Image (cartoon, rainbow over all chains, first blue to last red; front, top):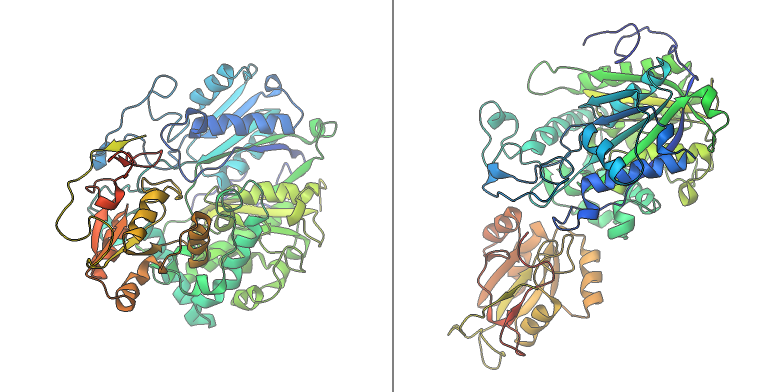
Length: 439
Length: 150
């Protein structure tokens, strides 16, 4: 792991309070519609079209105009599969501009989005800072907060998407896995991730006791919270609650990781607006202050990380995020850790010691009352398992909980601080938000 | 709407109403196969209803929870004989005696579970239309609005 004494990324131990703690605020957010996949036909429902809508919605939510935005940040990483998919023998033609390449269909570049905003009549005409990165949103939110804190932008629009086009998702190996991947991903991209997390999960069960069945209350509650999220995939398209029997009889993908333990790819986009605390004071929305952000990037010692690795890495993550915010576990009200696979979420829960949960105690915690109405409203967003593989529900929920606008998901416990992030224990970013500029 | 020229009725006894004919069993995947799927597949309610009228034993085999499968059939107003999870297809064969067992789906996973369960597999995007898919109105095969392009 490389270290940095300040700026981005924030990897190092012992950095103390974040230098911009409470001086940066989230003042707007927006999201698009959500589909299982782009249908290949509806040009108003492409990944690019969705992302432009999310950006416009964020600007409107903040009470701003596009001309007020002077900083822009987006991840240009491909969110799903390529549209053309020539490597699979399934070539498909592109369309008239602006859809004459992958840009706007399976990824979105900064140039495409900026041009799109102009086409839409909402030009980002005053950009002074543009950040094109390949980050996932966990890292990207930290970078956005840092950019505003460092003075690179005054009002920064950050956006992120997760896409899905027709065809099998993320068949990056092609039809056959080759080279070293034939060992680590013999049945395609996701099997590598699933094998990794299944392995660590089994180590967890061996060390602390319990089994895959003990995840059922958590997964069922994630779906429940997702169904309370009006824009989420399941609320929109498959509005039914899964049952314990559904969970216990689910099809295993990579034992013990099952279908219902795995997030479901969707086509969706999200945007947030960061500004200075000073500017935020007189804006439309109540400021949500950024108290800290940290990142993690850990190479594994072999093809597989171990439970010990995951615990060490997430302990460090939580320690650094709390330290940067000047907070302790008991100061954290809303906690939305990542759940791309249900098998690893407890790593975060226990590292952050949210509601006093220590190593090995997650299964007992899940078996208690974790509903949003209850005393331990864990992952009130529903996460990816409840809303689809957006990777952003944990952000929209955290903002809404702190604003008091979460509707049916609004928790009954104190909601003045929130922490959230993604993706996995080996590589992620987390951010700490608060309605107050300090704890 | 995509149309397909219908097949010539075969002599396997399945190309018409069931009077005195052998019994076939058809298992339908949902997503990507039936028009109610996410995404919508090409097989319409009318086709499924016709297969049932012709005497086929029909039901669904999907990764959707069983409760959701049942809700889908209730929405369509079609009573089916079975609703099972995809990896439970083999249980259908043990429950129903039939002269033929076919699973219709759109993915490699469908093909896998059909084969390990002793079912013939028909890939919905490429299969030759079955006789029960043919409209008696005009003798054509009327796939769902999305066609078979997925």
